[in-house]
Amino acid sequence: MWQKLMWVGIWLAFMGAPIGDLLDGNHTAVPTALGWAGLAGFVTVYLALVLRHTARPLATGTVYGLLGFLAALAVTLSLTLGGAWLVLFVYVSVSCGATLPLALATWAILGTTAGMTVIGTHLAHVADVLPGLAIPALLGGFAMTGVRHLIRTSVELREARATVAQLAANEERLRMARDLHDLLGHSLSLITLKSELAGRMLPGQPEQAAQQVADIERVSRQALVDVRAAVTGYRRVTLPAELAGARTVLNAAGIQADVPTEAPEGLPAAEEEVLAWVLREAATNVVRHSGARHCTVTLAELQTLDGRFLELRVQDDGPGRTGGGAPVAGNGLTGVAERLEKVAGVLETEARRKGFTLIARIPLIPDPPGTPLVSGS
Image (cartoon, rainbow, N blue to C red):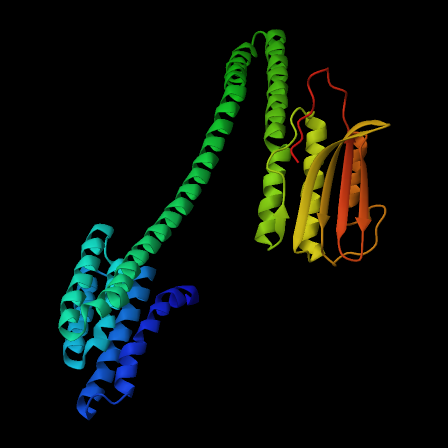
């Protein structure tokens, strides 16, 4: 609200001319009083129209009526009180740019500027009107149309992003439904048929019915295995997703995040999942405990005497944690260290007076010649 008020109110700087005209005593008491009243009414309607319409659009008839009131007041005050009041046409132009559709606003701005110029030539020298008032009226009006277009584009972009996210979620649900149908459709149909067959065999063929029941058990167990495998695949965390999640959660917490946009390619699933869990825990700790203003995440391949390693480093500049060395039990790092041990990885922490660094390294299996690991740092 305050930002909008500042943007709209900045044009009030042009009110110095009519205010100065009233304060200089160029008019008698009655015209001066009417001038103050007209000026107050003009500014009130101008602010109410622009601020209210940009927040929640007014009815078309109301907008036209208020614009007509502003234009009539600008003409009346200019003709009765002098050339200093021509500046009111600048506000009429700005109001047209802020409230009217683009095509109509263009003609309204040009018409307002032309009307001001015609009236101004009868009250002042044309050389004073054109550069001092006509140009600000044109620039102010068209600047407001540009701002409206920018705001409308930003709103449409946010709506488009929300729509894309919703469509992606719907597509994921449909994909999972298709996968479950493919996994369970045949198995459940087979179980149903064998159950009916076993039911018919029970009175006179108990041994064959028992065989059907055994088949039902085998099929159902396999279906359960397939469902568990599918759900595990859906639930598995991935490094690209956690990089995007870390960037989002850090930015949401007001922490400037320097996070890679891509993850290394060719990582085995187990190693990738472990690094994803490490990154999730590290980002959570930065948000909850660090009090940092900046956090940097890097992924880099290291070549040492012990072999090739992929190093994940999460470094913040916060004063919120002290102490270093081994992970502290109970803060989530112990579980991360245990996950790393399963893939022969190591976890290190470095605490300084200002800042905390978490380092995770996992060994890389040598690749065939010509297939280097692509680093996402």
